[in-house]
Amino acid sequence: MKEKSKDRAFMGHPRGLLTLSMTEFWERFSYYGMRAILIYYMYYSVAKGGLGFDQGTALSVMSIYGSLVYLSSTIGGFISDRLLGARRTVFWGGVLIMFGHIVLSLPFGAGALFASIVLIVIGTGLLKPNVSEMVGNLYGEKDLRRDSGFSIFVMGINLGSLIAPLIVNWAQVKFNFHVGFSLAAFGMAIGLIVYAIDSRKYIGEQDNQAPDPLKPGELKPLLIKVASGLAAAIIVLGIMAATGNLTIANVIMLLTIIAIAVPITYFVMMLTSKKVTKVERSRVWAYVPLFIAAVIFWAIEESGSSVLAVFAANQTQLTFGSFKILPGWFQMLNPLFILLYGPVFATLWVRLGKKQPSSPKKFAYGLLFTGVSYLVMMLPLMLAGTDARVSPLWLVLSWAIVEIGEMLISPVGLSVTTRLAPKAFASQMMSMWFLADAAAQAVNAQIVRLYTPSTELAYFGIFGGLTILFGLVMFLIVPRIEKLMQGVN
Image (tube, rainbow, N blue to C red; front, top):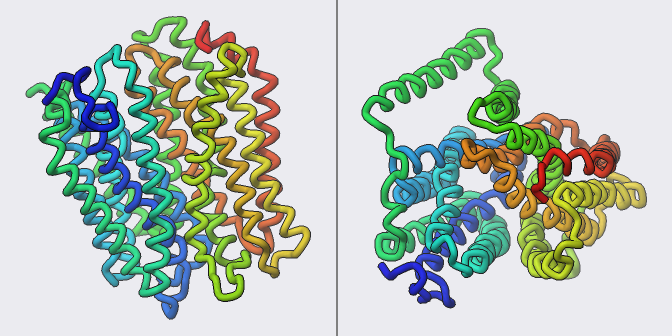
């Protein structure tokens, strides 16, 4: 492999960037393709090729699924760092994802759905965080191409997310749900083939081995902890079964509690650790309101694949003459607006320089836009009622607004997380950013049950209004947060 600084085989960047970008392109194609039609598969009647779940259960499963995907990223980081190294961890993650989509493409009902969820959750946890780390490892510490490389990598992610709903939803309507899911499996298979062929040649040597491998004396305690955790889970589920409480709703509630408890545990661990200095502890406290703001933002942003997806199918005008919009196509709006807004905001922050708002202020502005994106959805309901189908432009407008919120929160959050992290918990702090999304979707798994045609006006109004209220509170406490940040802007 070429020396890092001399490898300019792909658009002036290391050749490995193409390998990793294509791997993530196909992984996102498979995930977002599946996600574009999964909610409909769950609640459509059996006669329409679905599973016939009630709508509330389908929405709840969809949300907890997303939560588990982000929650599992902490496992992927550990396996890469202590056991397999990044390259092999990503490969086996892709294998599990592919088999998860294959299982879902088979007509085996709810059992196949839940089996696929387990496989895809674990596989995504192994693949997603480690691919990003490998991109960083393509560059030396002082290589000025790093930020540009990540920009190209993010373009690949969003292009995969953009194309997938268009193709997969078309296949589902043209044939059936299982053909659509099989395309997601095919996409991940292509990504795996590209990765398997290229990774040995173009990925750095440091990614072939675990940077902090387990010592012989550490393996037994780890196995005991894993076995204890599995045993505890089996016991809890056994008790639920014996008492007649082993239902989908109760299992989702249990997972919701875990997804919320994990980041709380991390915060307590960092704030009480003797490895954390006084200045670092202050910065962790500054991160707490930012984390809560991120949870609120992701709760609304991630509802695009659940609540807004149902609105698109049931209450949006989809037929215009001979042309028909498929409801899953609305899932293209998220990556589309990210691709459109990304260069605009990147240029804006450069031009503003030191005059740009601080990170906490950006979060506050982001929450205002996020809340407004929900309030916008009240307007067609007030104008036309809950029984009429409304213009698809209302959904386009809502997504256009919430993605402004994402530009103000998501990339800023990634940056501020790394800068506020205590040295002893640098990796764990990065996991916290993913856990904000996990906690948000876990909360969604409970509140989306409240979404029905009779309650949706109040649903959009209450949760949109509360988000704006928290954004205003954020503005009030910005000076306090900035003080706690101890010089980090």
